[in-house]
Length: 482
Ligand code: F0G
Image 1 (cartoon, rainbow, N blue to C red):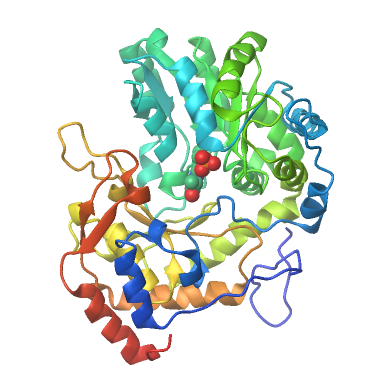
Image 2: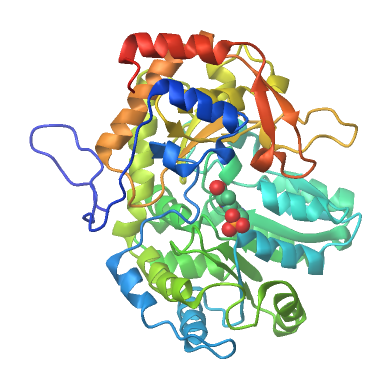
């Protein structure tokens, strides 16, 4: 969206949509939130949505739909096989990405399951700019390993670099030399690197990396789940791309890859997923997994209503006004908090605003989950649900020791078109309060620790009575009713 100029004040992000349907929110009294947090085992994934004021856990499947998306749902063609809806979806994706071979799936990790199941053999290596939890779990489950070759500066939390998701080409060359190209199942580039703060990757870097992979006969795969934000950043931050339309940029990016997959819970504002496969033979080989694990080839586990909505969502993603909303709100939140002295991941990226938890609660040891503690504290002090993206979200090392995350973050996701600027200001205010009372936050330990993706369903407890002390201070400042 063009930055709307103001006459009498500094510009603020501007919504290029208006509200048509609303959902009532409640802010539970502080002490009730404390009980809810104990009930949820200090894991924000286990809270009930009705007990949350600002749900900033994720932007996955919770973006607001447009009127056009909702009305498209009415024309969904219900059929087990051969639904017209599928052919419309295929046509739209071909128009945008230039690949006709579409495998529909129920969500992003289903794509990862199928891709890994088909391409990864025990002992293989998969190159990534950075891992995502589910994309790594599917590779390691098969006895292979992931090499994360993001440039070192991508892990520097406070920075002004525009493309912190870029992969390091020297590291890629060294990895190919060490592993041997034949042992590399594929190179997966994540556009909008989730776990380092939604940081984008430049077109130029994608081009160089995929050229290098192709030189060695390595299959190139784009995780396009967070592509919409990445497209915005390519247009805004990459000088040579600033005059190109989003549609042109998307096609240039797509042309670099053999396979493109996405979670349509993010890309397309719906709920579903899909894999686009350039090579006809590979496409047909992978089809078997769809019928086995997802559903028939013309719905892949998705509701046709959602598919119709996301067809419109894909088109809306090509609209610069639409895809600017998220990054602009995130940039505002990051800038304000940074100015208030709160350690943030800078520059603001896509997906959400990310707090550098390692800096905020540097008195909490890594094995007591600093980001997990901070995110729990934020629910207690404001009813805001964020997501831990740090050591808790990692799997343990094979010897049982903690795998300490390179970046320890609390993510405050901005689902698209959902929150207003006043709600954003409320979040900024509570985060600042919490930052000023950070010494009251203590660590957590597991009481129930699942082996795989433990952050989803694990239960923890505080190592002391720090939540009670923290709430006392909160109530003293804001009163018990909020
Ligand atoms: N790839 C990326 C980059 C993602 O961010 C996600 C999901 C997936 C794949 C998996 O897709 O959830 O549809 O199975 N990210 C969500 C999040 C869970 O909250 O960031 P999925």
